[in-house]
Length: 403
Image (cartoon, rainbow, N blue to C red; front, side, top):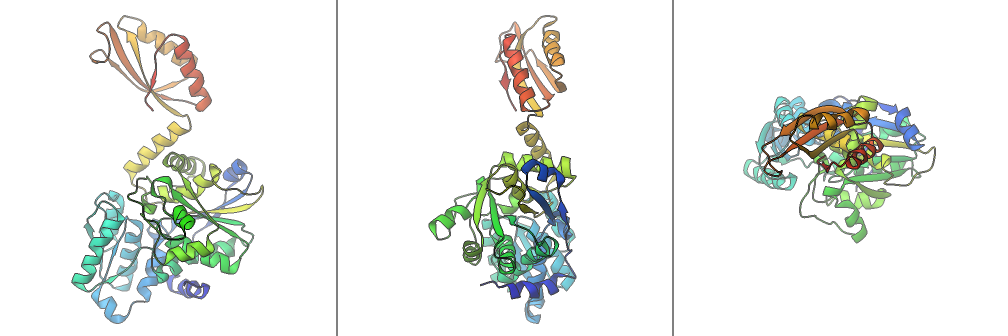
């Protein structure tokens, strides 16, 4: 099983290709949580995510004949980019299978780093099946995204950096997909500082780790559905599971709306862009998914920042909805002069700012003497939304909240 010595060896191998990422103290999240919060900004890593560490270490261990034959892997995006860059820098040909619906930005970046990309499969598991076929057909070495000790050792260098930059750390919070990242970090942390906690976080729509730990064996879920595509795997790995079981203190889950809120907090308060997987540790902290003491030193690992712009747009809107800063409503007015003005007077009185308004006389859902109105509004929080909706209903408006 993975040992600290493996991670120390990996540290020397990955130093030239990967960056030592910052550990940044956050006054904002410290005041919000009454903890001492330091963000490990792995989203600022080369290729935009931690995966370059594990990929570099694994490729460094290939034999000359394996390097000559080339490598193949499967990835939703971040491992793909890490392998592409690490392989290119080592002069190794790389072929990478990505799910058909992988974010366009990650597909383009992988190609730009020098790899050949094959799009196949609905998710990581199906992409991996095709990658293994290529492995057999072309005699390439398969580089697993997480279930490989050399990959885990590379990711574990993050744990070494955290301990060096924050020796008083009490809790490290890490995303979990297949378990490679947390296996490496947890091994480094627990062997260097056994009293520190390691908390794993999964998305509710891709949660296999907690049931696996409860059952004492790997559980594979039927499918995944989450905005955190970087951790959208159906199960822990065969090699990662025993490490997670031994070294990880607790595994919790967060919902997609909670991930969206954490994402917009990082954008707005920290000027930091993260993908869904990178936001889950902060989401778990902000939404009290695990217990901690006042003043405890906590390090959420922001694992990556490679978020597709269309996805980011949707996440921002969802986060604004969840925090009561965006409201979309529908109501019905009498189709007569002054009706819209009366409605707008209520909006003005409650200082609701209009993003957009749509006035439809042709809707089949209303009487011919009525008109339907949809309005998108900027609000100032959930209390503001509740007061505004109550005022509309007191004035006799029937209001449907659309978002």
